[in-house]
Image (cartoon, rainbow, N blue to C red; front, top):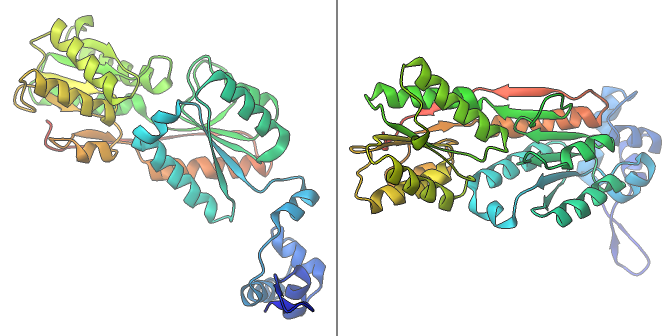
Length: 343
């Protein structure tokens, strides 16, 4: 029910309209809106029914003046802006976190900070209280954003393990090392022994752990680690292509390739095709992520699936718990080998 003023224009319903419709006090409505503490189930249902009937929408600005909260969360990506549009993983995470927060009626603000100046500006904005917490994605070694926000008391959850010992930042991560181990075991099971790798950036935990998993399985299988079969990339398609070209030049007898992201693997496939190598007949190729880049590749990529739906849900859960006063926590989720036509 919306009310009319003397000019005939309809004004939005207020908390007083909800209270009148529900037959309760304004204070009861306020308690329902702020979590339902000390409200009977009967009164809570009456208020919720009145909200639906009147079409009342919470005035977030007014409530933030009372509670000291913004009722919003930041999604901070510390990568160049072009990476956000190129790499499908970021969009999947953003969508998943948006949906998880929507269940709590909390909007998500996208923040891109690929340069030092951008990170300084956004850190100032966040620490000024414009968001209640931050979901941080893709933090590299030497990037002080996570520690600065933590030191400022900002609730924070990072996607991926923090670099370095002793970090007290909450995080949610897939088991990168175990996923890499599964992929290399699969390539070995095909009878391949000259297995190359294009790792992720080695200033990120994912880059370090996936390379470590590759080396561990080869060592366990009695296969010598050949540095000529190791190249690194930055998770971009171009770096996967360049890394594969380098490996073909240094080790032309390479018969399998583990690429530490699906997007880089797309670049690897282009380099192999240009060199006249058939996939999988001459070189079996495995990726990592199970993003849209894996199914769009030709041939479709065998890859390691990261559970992005669960990663998003857990990041939001841990962040809301921190905002509510709980201590930082960590969650590591299992990965899964997905076999397709590239192996």
